[in-house]
Image (cartoon, rainbow, N blue to C red; front, side, top):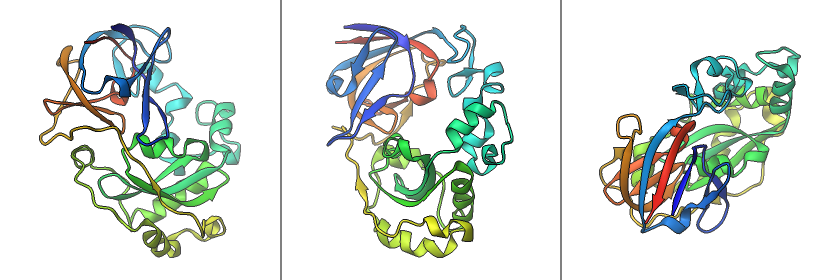
Length: 264
């Protein structure tokens, strides 16, 4: 079977295990069905997710010009405390920013390689946790806009990490933690204006990934350096494909790359 299309992050469905899909313009692939099969990936060209042109991808699927113009990749996306839509102040596109920022957001704890704090729109739970490769997560606060979520995350960074060690996550060198107890300890560090949004109840969400074999030594596949690769797919975790030879491929980091896939 042969497929060709521009890569975007894999779509997921919550299940036991998580179900993964690659979506192309005219086709889709249920990636779980490719486990234990030989998969060949070939880089064809670039296709910016905004302008659609064959221009070198700069970051997050966008060419250089669009990365600094498109509202989808404004600084507030990575740093939610910079959100200003609640003040009626525009960054790049106020209508878009109001749509995305002025909706319920969750500040959460997730355990991928260690316990980390993060922010996501409520509509993206549990998708955000899955994309990060978290095997357990819990909601901390639910706030009405992105700004309040952002200042909460900043306030908690001195108490808990805000980054995931992707190597540890992919090797599955993880320890189960009592997130309920950890959440209770963090309550006092939440900003005063957010205290009323603390979620007193709630339990951990456990996430199981379709992995038959975890890598022991990681080799990251970069399609610019290695435009043709072939290997036996052994697992999917976060937004990574894991192969039998310890090669791992970050699909999300390769958004905007047009690829040709051959399944044997």
